[in-house]
Image (cartoon, rainbow, N blue to C red; front, side, top):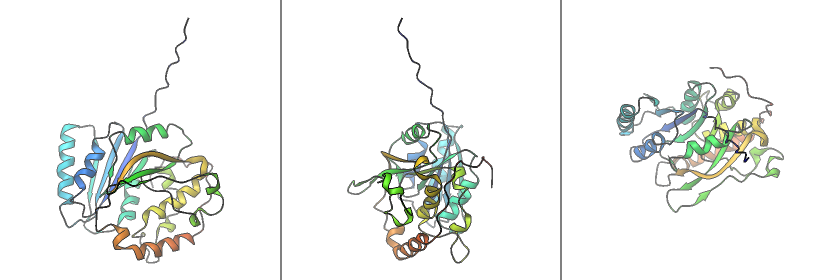
Length: 266
């Protein structure tokens, strides 16, 4: 008698896709469609229009309204800021309001997910309960250059803040890991959230708290990085970026966590 081994049914983790958008009217439709067309059911969207002065907000409202009419199960929250407070402040608010136990997917408003199976692929990665955080692989919209995380065993020796930066798009992490960051480390000398370089501000402490046991690189291309935007931060505010990067390298690293705190709202 032949024994047939049953395939273990995948846990459908809950994802919250946080889109941080400012003056992206040229790309907002591609950005939003890449999210709402995901072939995955258990996710919601938090779209933040950070006081755009173009048509970003109107286009987003129209697209999400159409999606709601077609799929009443989709949970979408759109925030229209009256003041431009920058990405990190918006991300912090969105994660705070997300469902406990969620996996956060951070998406810039002028970029887009690479295909409709991204959340499926991420869900497979998070089947391992040891995974708290991932960094992904992306392709540039012009030229097609592919960037993948470069992390080996030696990378974890010493202070990662002084190593080559390799924790890039698509960045995902468990909500409770993000909420474990010392908030003071996200605040600049003026008492506000850092206005630029938000990725390093949050990734350094989360990677430090996770260590190699709880970090996973994702080598499949999940993200398209838009090289067409002339207002991209790394072009317009590069000097300020470099100043913040140098400041972050001098901060005290976060201690490794043995386990994540229980889900709770902050």
